[in-house]
Image 1: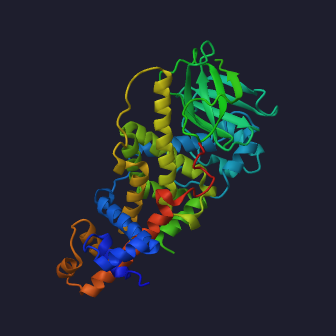
Image 2: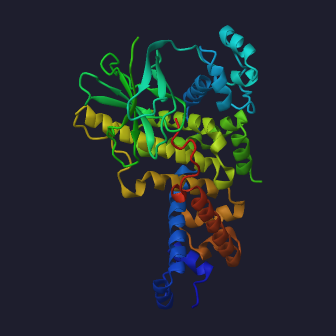
Length: 240
Length: 193
């Protein structure tokens, strides 16, 4: 069987030529040439569409500032000294940012003086620490291992720091919810945890934390169903 | 080692300047993807921010051997944007409001995957050697035939043919490696954060 010449395939893919009867017959029989033509045709289409996305300006600087602020929060030790044990693992000593002079608060510096791997921790400049406006301790439900636990802090800038440990493995993902304990059909999804011990999730502006005060971590499947799975693992109530 | 590979290595190794470089080179593509998917500039900027944070925090699971920094970033951004649509749908359902979504990617041509593929191919096109790139631009954007391209550029027809064939092969490889259908690149930050 004589396969189509690569140059012919390109011409057909660009619709510059039409297939002659012999080529059409071959394409009908030969899955290899057909797939080849289909892939090239798709690339040609994408290439034609690429015209208006070839020189995109970078996003505005405030997005960059947000990235820096998030990284500062995620990579700098916070209040409790024991966090310094955790942080170095997430922030390997290589990669010490140079675009910012590390600024350490006196308290953090005192903590760092104790920790041996202190150098890496000043990694990102930290904006003025947001105050904790509410917190919750998460305890395991019967569906979760007894050792599973977590803690939640809501910051004055509207973000929630979620810290969990010993959650059971999941084939899907872990999702964080705020539930109205007076009507548990009312709830707000904050986002996913998957795999990470600590995440920062934005609390949707306007969320009434006096009402949606029950923090819930659930096990969700990748089933396309956006609703709560009903499989809650951890729960705790926010108090200010 | 191509410039893209070098950036990938530095990024994975935690060179903080690589984050800024990646932001300057690819932030626009990440934002464009998010805008297309979400149809809302403010949400798209949030997703862009979250994407770079997640990519940096998860950089150790990034394997430069399996794709480029752009492919990695777009993969994260696509999932984050889709997650955001899902949670919007959910919030609206839960609050019992009967509002229709702002129209995100509604036409079949404009799936998030399609936008990712287009951005990847655009980047690959930008990286082709000059003459190859020029001939492909004339074929794609100006819809010129091979003989017309030969006439416009003064290149022999055989050279035009081989430029286009090789150029398209490069774009195709890049699309297969970095495109939306290339599958999960790692178990890493795709779902983290």
